[in-house]
Image 1: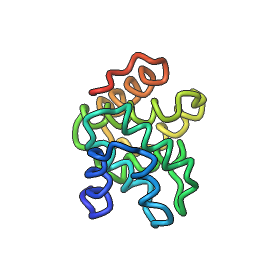
Image 2: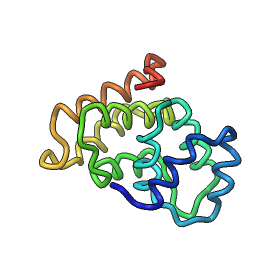
Image 3: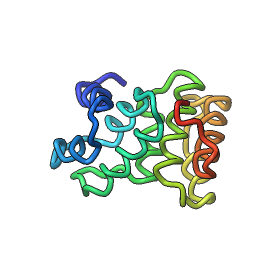
Length: 139
C-alpha cells in the first residue's frame, strides 16, 4: 500500500513534535488505511501509537478508531508476519482498553485468503502484548 499519503505519514517519523505533525495534517482527507500504512513503516511502535492517538483525538475528517484500524489491515496488504506484528503493536498501544470481544469480532471479519492464519496470529499476539504493556517498542 504505497500511496503519497502513506509515504507522507511515514516521513513524519522524523518530526520531533507529534502534536505539531498531526496539526499539520488537520482537515486533510486522510483515510485510516493511509495513516496505518504509513505508521507501520515507523521504527518505534510507541511513537507510532502516540501519533495515531493524537490523530484520532484531533477529530480528523476520516477517523481511525479501533474498528477502522481493523478494517484497514487487509486493505494495506501487509506481506509479512513482522509487518502484521508491528501493526498489531501499534493498534494495541493506541487502544489498550479495547474490549477482547470486539477485537475477536473485528479480526474474525478478515478474509483468510487475504490474511493468513500465521499473519493474523502475529497481529493478535502483538496487539495483546501491547495492550498488556509487554510490547517491544521497536517491533
